[in-house]
Amino acid sequence: MYSDIRTPVSNSKPLSDTVQPLNPGIDPKRMGPQKADAPKFDEMLKGFLTDVNHMQNYADESIQKMVAGEIKDVHQVMLAVGEAKVAFNLMLEIRNKTMDAYNELIKMRG
Image (cartoon, rainbow, N blue to C red):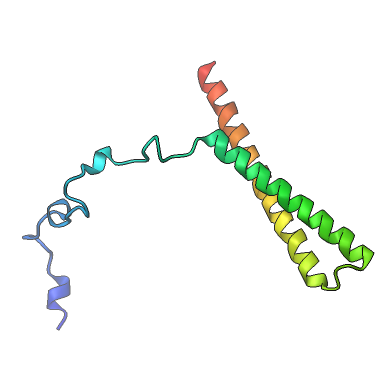
């Protein structure tokens, strides 16, 4: 019953011979992001900072409207504040990792 499992696979082909590329006309070693399609890091960072700023402003406005009595749903305000907090924390982590990478490059140079 278990004889098939216990016997070593000696006459099998290497995995690279059996796996076919999804698109045979493209060399997988040359694949990667195209320069025209890939956004630049600074553009991505500016866009993210703008989004975080909008979330922070929306959360502040929601709190002010709740205090003024314009918004009755506390859950809506808490959701806006929570989203702004998560986005801000993510922005801080991106900044920290970027600074770590920069400091590591400076150490490697000097």
